[in-house]
Length: 106
Figure: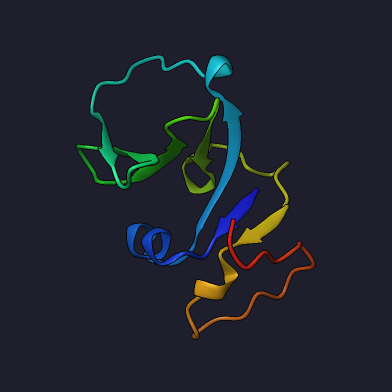
């Protein structure tokens, strides 16, 4: 998993955004009813549920993978933290205590 501490992810999720990654080609929606995409920058968009507002996905427009919010997975027991990104933008009210690499930007 990747934890993103940038200001935009913190505002969107209410804390930091934790996600795992899947290839867009390997990703199939059984149903995309209620799924809405918001272009959050010139290079990326965020997928969320239009019914409940849950943040679900993040994808870079020109890359072949997408991030899937770890909190929306039915079983995340096999996931481990792989890295923290944008730690220079981290909020001051918490510390990163795991041993995963910490990257100042992306």
